[in-house]
Length: 192
Image 1 (cartoon, rainbow, N blue to C red):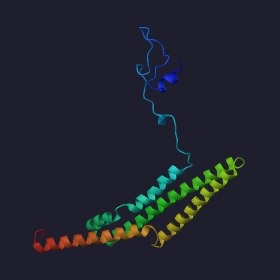
Image 2: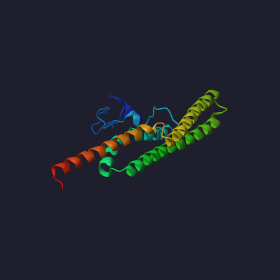
Image 3: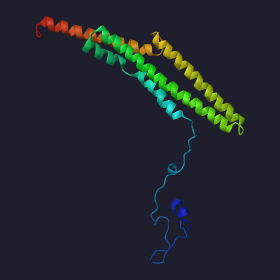
Image 4: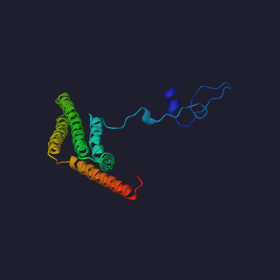
């Protein structure tokens, strides 16, 4: 009997070796491990560099979705000066451009991989080459869009400006809260 059959068969009576009493054993009597198919089989289609690109894209998205208003409020309350506000806005824009650069670099690496893959399958499948070229064009279009966003961020426009406005609004609200509390504390004479 094949050991592979004994592991993956159901509780049918099999021609298995006999036990000490001379009786044949069933699959249920044999200690069979529960082996799941997904340990040995990968049913997902192969991808070329999409995992890295998606995680990089998420970095830009997560950066833009951070609570910049709350951070601005905290900084405004604690530091309440214009120099701090201007420095943090410059820092936000610089961090945004860094995230964009990382995604652009990843997209360019993906384009290179796609070009190499297209060369490998060139004589085998014309349809595959066209599909690869289509994905390559999509990556190139996104690189162009991201380059444009970098330029826009330098001139106070583009995706990053919502983040900048949220931070500025939070900062101004934090300064306002600080001044209200300071005015209230000084008018009561508690903290003189």
